Image 1 (cartoon, rainbow, N blue to C red):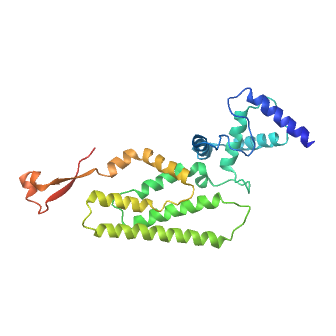
Image 2 (image 1 turned 30 degrees about the horizontal axis):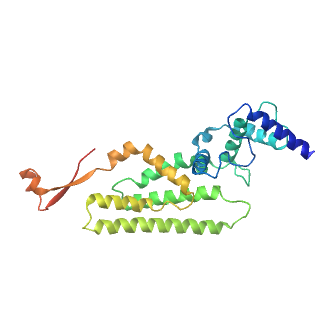
Image 3 (image 1 turned 90 degrees about the vertical axis):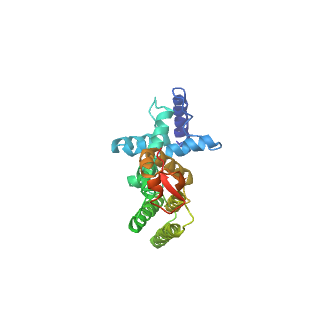
Length: 265
């Protein structure tokens, strides 16, 4: 019986390959080759594809049923490899592989860019107060912790205290480093305002976790692309000029040898 089901699945996949440019479907396997950088890159793009956030409940049930039919050798004729890959992508994006339960939308890997980008922008906001710095670092670490917990390996249960300890440690260390470095930079008179701004932004972003680096790199790139117009207006393009080159009335208003100004775009 098992041989018959396997044969039927293989026949269906073989027929599907003739009507689609997609590679032959393999249940539970990545669609793209993992032996090359480009293949791994496309695999990660598939994982974080935000379009899966808009999949309806009905479409999810259809995708799950299609994969079950393939698994049991009852796949209907005419199903293409592209349809099977799409069904697997939808299932893996929404359902936890171990518990088979739906992952809360903001904590899915496909939701990392749309829900993580505002946090990255918030971390980069200029002229932050102590309260705002603490808030954005706390929100950043909370989001990261929830993403890691929602996508955890559920086959090996871990005590909740372990996650709580890790979460508290991440929040405390991130806030301490960001606030401490900001205070240190503000007291460093040798740095120009432009240099201080750069170091402060680096301090605020240092708390991005080391996990899921390919995905987080794409998040940062997306944040930069989506927030570029905002960043241009928020982050002044600073430059220096000697006071002797200024108009007399401006030069007389300061005792500094050089001044810093916003040169715009």
